[in-house]
Amino acid sequence: MFLMDDIVRDGDPVLRQEAKKVKFPLSADDKKLAHNLMEYLEVSQNPELCEKYKLRAGVGLAAPQVGVSKMMASVLVPNDDENEKGKPLFKDVIINPVIVSNSVQRGALTEGEGCLSVDRDVPGYVPRSARITLKYQDVDGNEHKIRLKNYPAIVCQHEIDHLHGILFYDHINKDNPFKRDDDEVFIY
Ligand SMILES: Cc1nc(NNC(=O)[C@H](CC2CCCC2)CN(O)CO)c(F)c(N2CCN3CCOC[C@@H]3C2)n1
Ligand code: NI
Image (cartoon, rainbow, N blue to C red; front, side, top):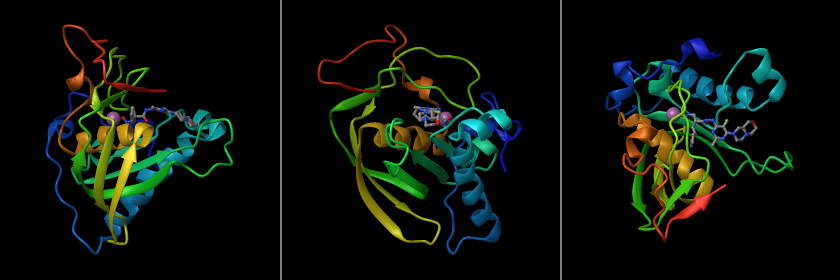
């Protein structure tokens, strides 16, 4: 199971590398990696376990963040916290993901973004595409082509950035971090 000690921090070159495509069928190691990347999110979203293992909660985790420069990331975007019963908005390990198209309209999380690999707050809006069409393979090698918007779209863009050596604060406007474009959607 991954713990915070396994998470590589900003400054480590692996976070600025272009990750390598993953070959199918997955090796045993890659299968284990995929499992562990998703397990981290599940454990971190359980209040008791999160506390017990001293984790930072996460809704996404990319392989380079655990020192593995491969095109793989886990995403677990829960339904609004109230009714935990609801099934997640999006849950999968996205392998060799490609954003094949994106809306002109931009979107950003109202509270800005953070990153498990960045141990400091970097205030400001992180402008992203409000909607994306994402192509990826799952652990079984099945091809998926899905349209995402709002929260899941933002999370997937944050994770795919990691696979290309991009960190969230690279997108924050230096002169005016809270610059709002008029047609931008803000996601709570
Ligand atoms: C938005 C949010 N970001 C959390 N952390 N940061 C992360 O996930 C980083 C990735 C996200 C940062 C912004 C977009 C993607 C990790 N990144 O570095 C991976 O590359 C959260 F933890 C969180 N939630 C809301 C849902 N809640 C359900 C119950 O459990 C607690 C959980 C907390 N929402
Ligand atoms: Ni991150």
